[in-house]
Length: 340
Image (cartoon, rainbow, N blue to C red; front, side, top):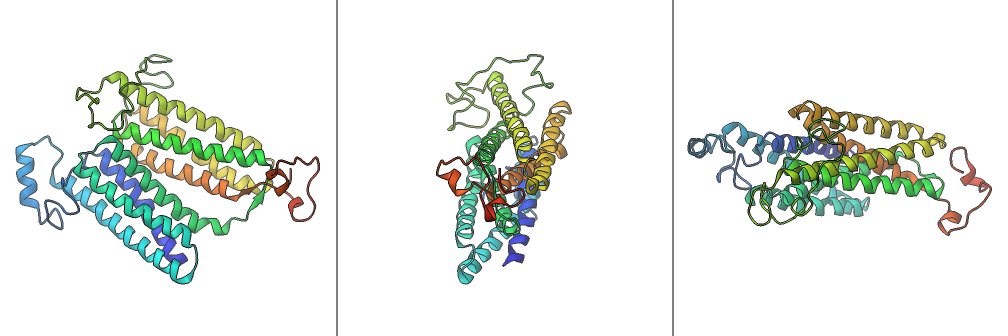
């Protein structure tokens, strides 16, 4: 089963960034129905319908190239779903990793529904963001199933374990904000860095920026979403990046005292540095498509590093009960790198 999990992880690592590529290249409605394309199995079979739609709206979302992008993503996602179903079946049959395999299967089933709603509900920001989070969840569960058995548990001070938990929580919030930025096309609402449109603190408007039930580009009353709302969405994502950066730096500083964690911390720091650099480059270079897709993949990599790190950390039993000991515990807990 381990080979199946690794195969699914590698396929998910392709599917998730490719989904971002489809969205960022404005191909999300290349086939406006689901699961086929104009009721056919492929864009080649639906070429006449695609040509008619493109002739009626030359600047619209439908073209043969966009249809192929959308359908290729569906083919890959369908293959991933079948592989995950096989993993779940093997897990229950062999009585191994039943809980994560069952959770993975449930997330994939809901993810398929979100994929359908993304198309049929015409790219509503809440659905698109949820679809992004679902894809990330599939990738993270697969990474945990594949990689966590190779990491030995490590007993560390409770404060370090809590800090790792805060980092994971902040990254999840930042991922949600990043999805909201992308689904509302607010990535270029703030020009320049670190200032936003030549302002160190731009005027923010929260009354329209985070309404869940609304159409793409529209306020809840049907009017066009004001530019200040897009600035608000973008600016909060920058503030989230600042919070994540502070937590990562604190994690690196506190965790470096644990020699057994240093390799993992190097990976965490490298993923963080790459992601920050990609975020700044996207703003300064006006969101080039390869960098935008790489920023999506970087978010998955950074969250993966943080989650795997958090899964390794365990507090000594005395600390979990609220007892603070002034000396290292004997035996297994006092091995190098595992005490205070």
